[in-house]
Length: 187
Image (tube, rainbow, N blue to C red; front, top):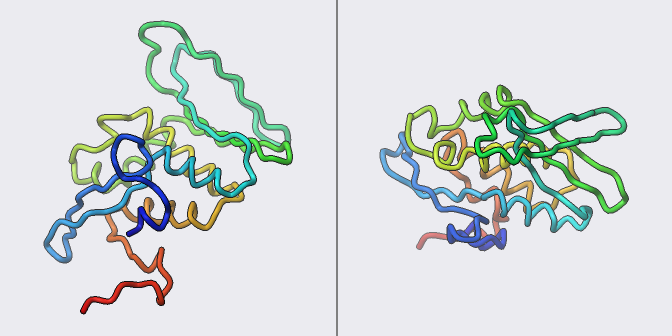
């Protein structure tokens, strides 16, 4: 239902969204939760019509990396060609607005790991995308922080809210997406 309303395909191939089983401890059963993926968040954010470019990148120890925040934000990132680029040190997300302005979020590893530590899967010591695809989770984390600063569509705001609830293990509330007139009735 949520995937259809947001126009995201939860097929695991496109990376727009995922349907993930979670334990609902209060009800004592497993429930499927809708999780927007990195590509889904980018797609939803582009729908605002206010952006010309949006993306995120991880920075490794052997990369050349400088950034400046403030009234004239800049990022200079030259990835290394080394076979082993080293550990991740930073992640950044960026957006160019159609009016020519930029918005940048830069996070160090400590900041990302603090967000990771709040993840329900991590707290339950279960396998999660943080284990299988850490670079993409770093990028998604920076992108979510960036979206808080951008002119985004209502769908993006809804998707971020749903993702935040899933991250901390809260059940998803269909009322976040549906008006009362659209909420299905069980007969």
